[in-house]
Image: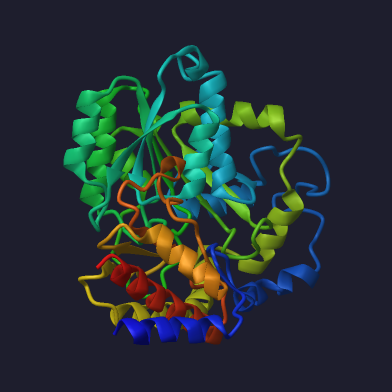
Length: 402
């Protein structure tokens, strides 16, 4: 067995692969779905009579705000339209709390902490690290966060400012939080502190590619719990139309909304109303967005199925994963501390994978076991090759410890 694995690895190495599996980017075939926006004429006025070429409307034109509100099930008056990604709006919300705060600026407080589900989104960790915020990690359980661990952290620590999570098709595990899980998060946070901030980054709200669990809109749950002033929900079109060229949306309670708007007023002269109008004319409304995302699903699903087939061939004694029903990632957990070794072996063959530890704060995976795979960017043939390399590397690294 050892010789056959080593021989197979050598044969793969000789093929001279140059395959990048590091980032969850749309494939060019997905981007082609929105090419019409690049050449379609756009009228200079919004349907509400606003000249989109000029200054003004820092929160977005009313039609775009209404579209975001329909996606998030939030009031239009406390929903704004931003640029590029939900990450940028979340950064601005954290910055506004750091500089100004609802009562006391965070910068004037000591020992700031945030709860972060793991494995999680590396850019969330980088964001919090910028502000010197300590990250308290909490495991996921398939339907959201481990609530026992959550309550234990709240009981143990002071000055936890909030939690930041991806409640649908979580990056990278694919967890879709149950209503009960979201309700418990909001209720416990509210009981902990009136300033506890629940940040729900709904980056994959629209990205089902298999039948997915139902989920009550977060904003509806926050309203039912009378916790609107402690909840902020975000989503974007970064993987709906064009990366870096989409729209982002934020909804929050009035106090948080005003705080975010104040921060943006210092940073942004006006919103990109031309891009908002372009998206409105292309996607039309919520129904149009959903139909557009069905086309994405038809492209993405076969790629994930290639990855599933390869991973299913691995013994559960070597590692496990849960099959996501949407989103852009697969999270693989090896049974042994071999993540760094696996990624190094893949690199030797010419297959680049997200660095080990990326799904944990400060790149510290305590078990050295979690590996994030991103199947969407590759064509099917390259993906098949990449998965063959990955599976061989996993088996070889596992064997090396015997």
